Length: 304
Image (cartoon, rainbow, N blue to C red; front, side, top):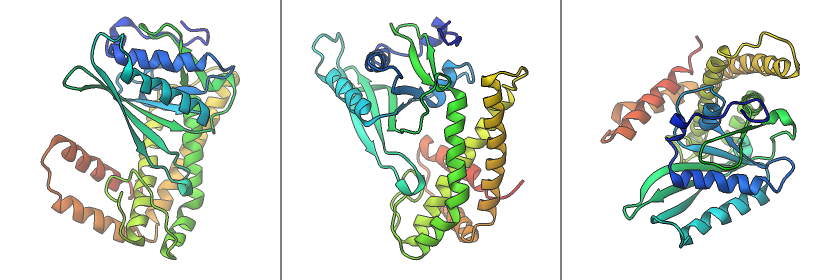
């Protein structure tokens, strides 16, 4: 058990991480040890996995709370490409992912870890720079992961919920004003929208904004389900803060749902997405899964 009281990960679970991924985690902790408040934190599904809140994860999401720590991390990971001591061929590839200041979506970088002569992908890392993480002990948890010498620092679920709540609050307040700006011809492209990553006009930019809002709403619903499994019974500073964020999550999720259901472009958006669903050519599992996910998002436009 770590010094924060968070249990370590069992060896059985740790076997899901290959040697190259463990090496990457070790590099992150090597950077962290130079700071009083570790600036590089595991977040997303793997952080929740480490906190025993879920049983599976895909890739590993990482928050760097400073630009400097992100630069150092990238340099150290890049150096693995020229590591002559490695017993296997390994490669680290970097792909920038644009952000959008208008919706407070930070820039990110997708990093693929590959090994062997065939370049088999072992794990993906998504690194974003986000300075909103608060510098308190409750925001960071140290977890022992077998195969990693130092404790792995991750974002606490309470802090991850706070950041999500802030994103929800921003969308609730700004969804309509941002829509009006786009209607007036102000241009800001919103990335990571599944269907409208290359908008051709203001309408498609608004549809991208709605998709991003639905993605945030979907995450909020997932967090509500996770919080239902962690109802605090006793009163202390941690549990009081957990209750506060749980209450915010429920209220803000409902408010965003109402905003989306009454959005001025809702009907046009639904027609456009339904048209895509009816005509999309599906040739692989990824496209099938994307179609199912888009259908799921579209249903959230309707209030329950």
